Length: 246
Image (cartoon, rainbow, N blue to C red; front, side):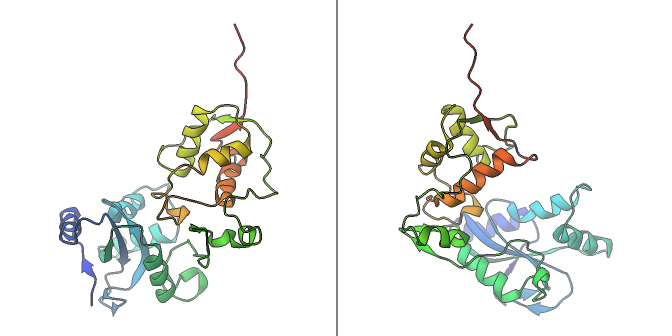
C-alpha cells in the first residue's frame, strides 16, 4: 500500500506540506469495505485531481439533495449504511497530474464501461500534442491542418459580433468566466477575433483544458464559445447589442 489515508482537512494539509506543498494532488474516494486494492484499503469509486480542500467537495455535494449522479449516490449509500467515505492521496505534484489521473482511471476501470467500480464520468481521449499544445479529442481537426491555432471551418460564430451575458458565470476563474471577462473588455468582437484573444489566456487551472503550459487548441475554445452562446443553461455570451447614443 502506498496511498495516504486522509481523516480530515488538517490531515490533508499535513500531507501536502510534507510533500513540499504540491499544490496539486491525485486522490481516490473509497468504500469502507476493507478491500486492499489499488494502493490502499477500500474499493475506489472515484479518482480525481485536486488543489486545496477539493478532496472534501464531493461529500459536500452529496449533502445537497438537488444533486444527483452515481458519485453522490455512492457517497449517500455509504452514509446510509453507517459508514464513512475513505479518502486517500495517491500522489502530490507541482503541476496538474492529468497523466496520473488518466492512468489510474484506466487501471481501475469505470462503472459506465463495465470495466471497474469508478463512477467517474470523464473519459480521457488519447494524448496528441502539436506545437506544445495538447489536442486530445480535437486531434483529427488540428493534425490535418498542422496548426493548433487554426479555427475549425465549422465554427458557427466566426463572423458574429459578440458580447458578455446575459448570464454571468458563477466563477471568473472557470473557462466560461475567463471568456466572459474577455468579452466584457472587448464587446463587439467577432467570434473569430474572440478565439484569437482567448489563445492568449492561461487555462492552466482549468481541468478540461488538459494543459500544463496554459495553451489550448482553437477547437477546444470554439466548443466552449459555442456552448456558452447556444446552450440555454449557459447563455454566458450573446449577440452584440450596441449602446444607443443619448
